[in-house]
Length: 359
Image (cartoon, rainbow, N blue to C red; front, side):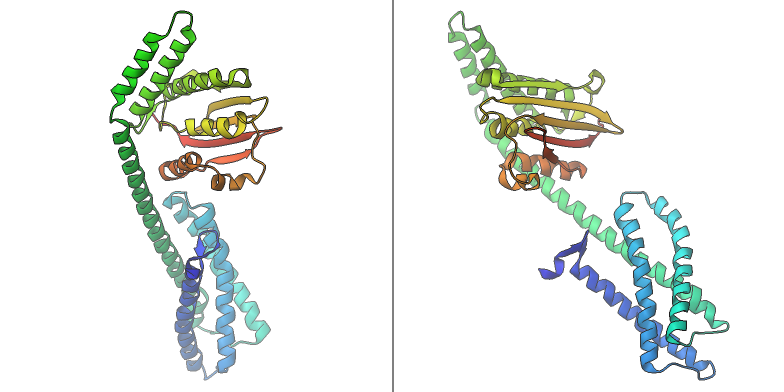
């Protein structure tokens, strides 16, 4: 629907209209209160057009002051704890009131509006702006909490759907797994002496199948297991491509005991092989760097293949399910992005981070 179209950051047209409606309703209540108070003060009152212009200018100032505060709290500081928000509000509330009061006084002087005087002025100059601020941000926080809850429920629904798909794939893969392994063992036994490299390749192929089958049952695996699987997988591809493929995996030993979701990197390597290195006449290289970045693990996969001729932001629309699956898993599990950029002079660079985890 057009009303659900995003117009800035996470704001939709519908949300903007609700915000305007809130200003109209609150402005009407303010107008009635203002009219009664001014009328009771020596019958001094502006005309209808002047009072309406006064209210419009008043709430226009409030809107201009509220917009950057919304951006601060719900964009820049959206992941900060509530305690940080609370302490910062202790500073922005008086700042909001004082800046609004100054601008409102200046607009009243410019347009010649009659302002409330005497004891009632404290209500209009301080208490009502404070009440407006509190009500407005209470609605902002309530709406943000609702969106967060809906997003979390949607993530859980997608994770359940992915889990169901994985379970179905696992059931299909388990139909006759022993038949596959026994067949590979039989082929290995039939290999003639002098072809030991073929026997090794078959054993490596069986290892990759065993690992992928076991990993499909787990949410987390040791990083060292995943690295061993990737090295075996790349060794098999190296036998196929010969000296057209070289690879390197760099990971400190102290990080290898940490845990990561299984099969998170292999689709990226497969993508680099199929679309970048295999089609290239001279082949290319693949390098995987894993290091600690604060409380996260940083993964960077670099290849020197053909790369992507177009805008890399469109890459996920062009490639198959592998890249999109990794992208979706990272977003659902950790809220992290799979980033891609062009390598110099050729190839692509994929990178992402995940929190440090122990098994």
